[in-house]
Image 1 (cartoon, rainbow, N blue to C red):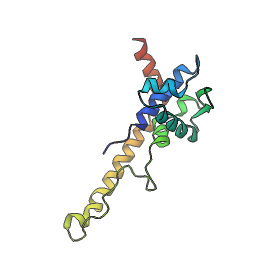
Image 2 (tube, rainbow, N blue to C red):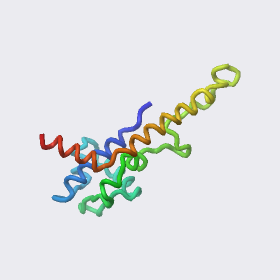
Image 3 (spheres, one colour):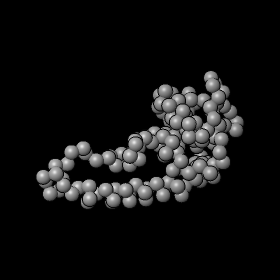
Image 4 (tube, helix red, strand yellow):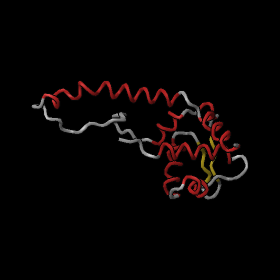
Length: 145
């Protein structure tokens, strides 16, 4: 299983917005050219980031701005804004019908549920420890080299 590319696309977009919005308008076309995806995908992710109250988007060619301090936005905030974990809120999903007559099938939830939850929580805690400010700073450092 793999987390969708929405998270890395959103992070890429936020870095661009943080760096470029002070000097020029950051539009979905500009973001799409940098990310290398269709502008429709960019607009969908912009909508998700706006709904999460991380950015503002001006209609038309007005551009996009981050509306929170970069230190206050963690990668977990970005992840939660764009990744759909469904009603369960779980990263890992289970196959629907393990066979209750099979010794493994009958016990698979007891064997894996807590382990998978612990893995998800560890990942989410790591994301919480990294701010957008840190990622933007890393990007700026790489750009100047």
